[in-house]
Figure 1: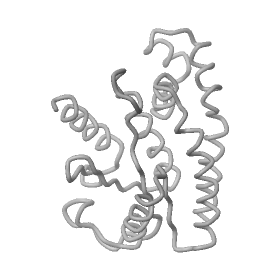
Figure 2: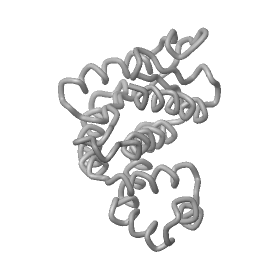
Figure 3: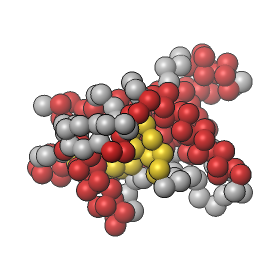
Figure 4: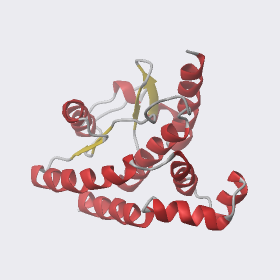
Length: 192
């Protein structure tokens, strides 16, 4: 309906604001999107932020929170013509393969590199991170989204009209410190 179309429009504006060139972010088939980021850490961070975005846009009437299945491929980009949708290279092949594997496992995060041993390690780490992220409430997703946009705890408190201690509490309950360390660790593994 209208709500869904409105959310897709807002999501399009959001993802285009994240990438270094507008053609690096596209929505296709209505509710699928493809993004290209310059760094591993940015890819991981924005993926988590996107899941927060959908969680915070869940209506009270919905039985389960909105979420996004995210497949990430890390590798080279051979070429990119007019948009990320007609690009090619290892990063895109791996992302596509990850997406197909993800559909059969009902997982929300799938990462593939050209190193099969590393992929097995990442799968274990991401499965644990996913358990935590999947349990985030709408309120927790809201503060993590803002945190990843660069807000301080006080700015978040002001924006959400809550106490700074409430922001801090939401971050603690969401186990943000552990997830943040996990992102940095995964990024360091992939960059090696």
